[in-house]
Length: 156
Image (cartoon, rainbow, N blue to C red):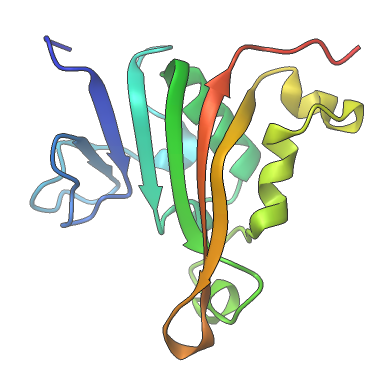
């Protein structure tokens, strides 16, 4: 990993964030690691201090697995930043390649210590740093979540 902390830009395409390792399923310019994120993240446990996932998580079929993988790869206290089209606007449904659907309430499954979410908390839990939605073009709404990894919690 070297002297610089590992920062990941998942689904980066050709617009990788500066200072990040770019990860995408396609070998585009700027992509450092080609990986099918549907099958997990090719990084060691607790190896990253930041993960950015901008307009990509909606393309995975299993958001629970995706979130668990992000939690696994983040160091304790690491930040996960997700930006996705919200179901509160047309953007979530207009793209036929979207395979999962998100809104602000979706993040409650990974941030609330509700015993009914024990099957998720048994593996991962985050705390909300920032959670907001904003209107975009063509009556699309985007939700942005910045979450901090916390240790496993007792759900019993």
